[in-house]
Amino acid sequence: MNSKMKTVFLVLLLLAGSCRKGEDHTAHDDHQHSASCEHQPSSRASIIAATAPQIIRGEGKYAGMVRIPAGEFMMGAPDGDTLVRDDEKPRHKVSVESFWMDETEVTNAQFRAFVAATNYVTTAERKPDWEEMKKQLPPGTPKPPDDVLVAGSLVFRQPSGPVPLNNPANWWEWTPGADWRHPAGPGSSIEGMDNFPVVHVSWDDAVAYAKWAGKRLPTEAEWEWAARGGITDAIFAWGNDPIDQGAARTNTWQGTFPNQNTLRDGHLLAAPVKSFPANGYGLYDISGNVWEWCSDWYRNDTYATDNRPEGVRNPVGPSTSYDPDEPGMPKRVQRGGSFLCHDSYCASYRVAARMKSSPDTGLIHSGFRCVK
Ligand SMILES: [Ca+2]
Ligand SMILES: [Ca+2]
Ligand SMILES: [Cu+2]
Image (cartoon, rainbow, N blue to C red; front, side, top):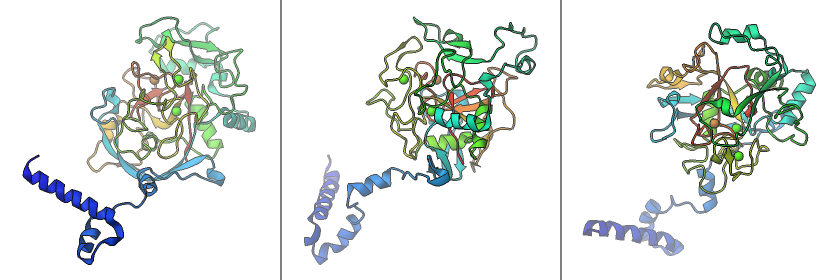
């Protein structure tokens, strides 16, 4: 320490000392006191309350929802996020209005009430229409056999040993009879799972539920702003601490994907909602557990289009969909990752991570939550 720094250090020490003295200060040091001390918080409670965004829980027709404040943020992956994918760039300025958001993913009990009231039949429960499907596939794709073109959904099958990660068919199986009431296929049930997130939900199913409930799906921008929970520029909903540091923060995949799961978080598949701490706005499982549909069409270049110096207000996404991985297949956005996400594979529990699926696709980890 040089002598100038020593002086500065001493002055700081004296100032700190004078603050602690409290009442016995003289008229002489009053001025100094007001300049240096009255901005000192008087209780740790006030510091904590000011640091954490306040959670505002709804009542009446907003019961089960939390208030997400209006605000401006940088949407997309921050520099230095090593797991970033191209469609999360560039970071760009976005502002959103305030809205209410379901504090949890929609549960089996909530979805059952919707089906009971409307007799709604989900996509997974309907025989796929080949004429419709073929429009999304490359021309000349042969028609699958009749025993495959039946009502069903995609179920995760844990392989017994390591498999190449470049082919999802190594752990996904088309399963006739799999749907929201039979998550693992015929013979499985949701008995006793009222507070688990509903799964095998297509985008069409999610929109139908939201309409019935007097709500809507969040835009992708609303979802990301809400997921950030009041923390600026962080990689995760809880900040920047690595996912495997400390107690389990959310339901993801631990071990070696997809063949070995250490169950450190206690769940191989979906967990009951609210099993892990909420983010700063009071949203549970906003990362992990099950994927959450957004209202937007997916385009890989959405952020390039929205990247303007003045920012964009309440973006609702592009008017058409484009995924270079599967041109011709229109897709909607999904966010938040699921119990199948691992940092070796997709790390989609990062708040900036984007996923896309055709609106008629539901899988054993596809769910949603609503806003209004
Ligand atoms: Ca897990
Ligand atoms: Ca989730
Ligand atoms: Cu994933």
